[in-house]
Length: 397
Ligand SMILES: C[S@@+](CC[C@H](N)C(=O)[O-])C[C@H]1O[C@@H](n2cnc3c(N)ncnc32)[C@H](O)[C@@H]1O
Image 1 (cartoon, protein in one colour):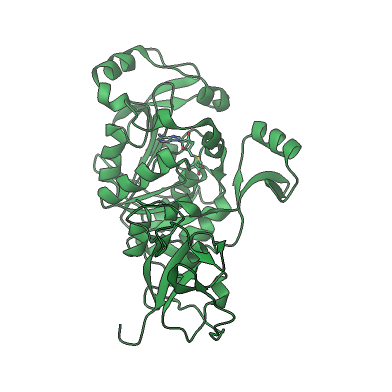
Image 2: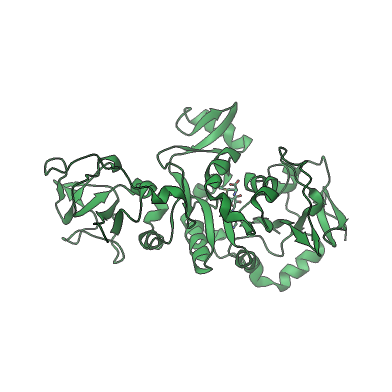
């Protein structure tokens, strides 16, 4: 079979596999945009119907798809992942929802590939979604066919690694995280690290899938998604928590040239974008990291300096708890239930606080509603935003 335009077949004596690799110097931007489906692969796909059936991607709205153009910067990946360094030893890392080609390839791949030996990884697998055809997979394994990959220190500071150990192949299906093939890859992995699509239709099932498969993960997430009724219970039960990064800091992302031109025209610097080191980056004020891997910040108790008074901390009109509108104002001497903003989760220490529930303004039995049946809480007749209801733990609890 002829290789698709821009690719060549290459026998890799180390892995014993014939792999498909991009021809050096060929514009990969073109490759990524182009939809090519090799004949042989088409037949396989037709007979593997279920693999190409994506439950969620069709629902992916155009509005949310613009955030799919937000790519995580290497600086942010390094800053977060350094807090879990020890965790990665001997692990299989899977990055779904990724980009695998050299040009425009994701910084998640670069991060792990360039630290493969430093972190002691067993295997790295990244997959790229292609809604119009076959997805792609890039794989690096420490030991294949009994041959261990000797690192000779040459790849330390470039974005490249020993390409003879890298396999780039087509997926049978489109690479959607919920395709059978990607579910299998997720099952084989020890830890999932990525920035998945933020739309509710994709993000919710993505998190649910990882939890059902009992996987460890570190992912970029929209902070408001912790108020989704099927995600919040994981936070309440201490099965998911926020990453190390301060949630009050804006998160900046790499964006495509086309989006750069548009956003610079439409928005002021500081609102939708910011120039960092000469590069225009897209801004998301509500992005953070979700994880279920321990990090040191989770054990740090929040320093509480304020004292309780009835005037400063009014009770809700329709619920027996006090309103604390800023996390830094949580009083040190109030033992009852308090309603705090959702950014509280960024400094939540499970030894210090107990999470009672969530008032998100929606009427649902899994959420806390007002005593008068209204889904929202009110203070002197004024509705408040979503609140997490917490209580300070007493000594010995
Ligand atoms: C926000 S971008 C992040 C890309 C990459 N993880 C990074 O941080 O650089 C989300 C990616 O998810 C991909 N995507 C969208 N729907 C998907 C699906 N159903 N399955 C897998 N990936 C999907 C998009 O094509 C996009 O590349």
